[in-house]
Image (cartoon, rainbow, N blue to C red; front, side, top):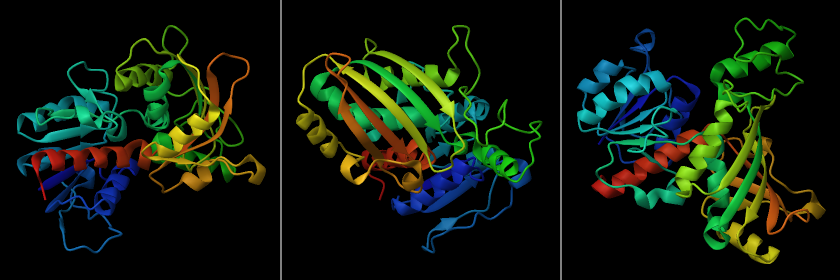
Length: 336
């Protein structure tokens, strides 16, 4: 099996390559794909397994190599142009951009939540927004048992969500350099919070906030869920955090809430107030789990709880989710 990674020199692309090895995906040839200026480079690997990896190639070269599966993480414009070409050539495309997520003919997949919806007919498969992934993984079991009526979520999102530019801007500011001319942010990020991620829509919400609303409904297959979101960029590198308030259709006991969270695939419950144990991005870095804590009943609203959700946005919120989709495709097509 041949697997291509488009955007292989970026933050998420590098993580995708790592996770492909870590998850022991049975590829015979790994094809890193990037821009023409990166063509010919060798991707440094953490692993010494005897499986072939080509030098970095361009998109047209990768297409001619006829990969079976391609993971795209090079932005919406690249995906819009090239994903259909790869799909027409018989390649299954897993796209990490926003391009295909809300297309009614394309499935938006989180394997632990709606992976059963994948079929051999799916040529382009969308990877959700990083903040959406950790939210739906944490809430999936609770939604199944009690039916979610409303979600209020505020996010605290790492600079790694802005790629290398976000990390470099934070590092520059911490060293005393505050020129914003090449910054991905409209304001300083060090010692600051910026309540804007992506552009504003006409209704005052940002595109990032609308992604969370629309993608959550699509993944759960329930357009009736009332959702409101506020997304904030914070000077952190380890992962994204979310403060979440959930209202259910039915009554519940808190003991059952904890039991469900403990049993939810992909979730690690870290909730011990007496020992000051709760999820933090510094501890989620490099991990593939979604960490949940500060779970408590909301006494101000009927059938409601508060919880705190943290995950590594580059891995669990992007690369790992995409690779788990690859593993499902391998099972469907019996690649081994």
